[in-house]
Image 1 (cartoon, rainbow, N blue to C red):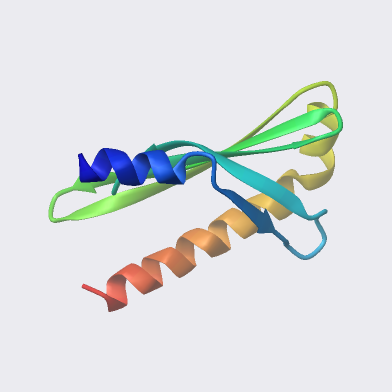
Image 2: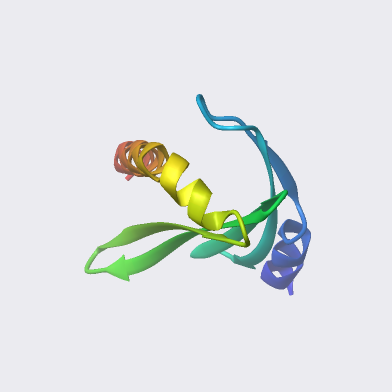
Length: 105
């Protein structure tokens, strides 16, 4: 079906992500649910970063959940060095997405 075909085309897509103060990352989409969620993963020496974006219906609107998880032997160090900055970026992304969604109602 068309939605399944689109999902199949999105899984495996790779995106270069650059954020100030963080090393460049190469994220690959590993899970895709059309219209509601995706997960992408970046791997580097000693750490795997998994980030999800999930939309959930709520009354006549929706909520957005953005999560990030680090795993691997260097994950504790990455959490220590990057968690505050990463949280600021997540907050900025959520605010931007909310503004865009509200202007396109």
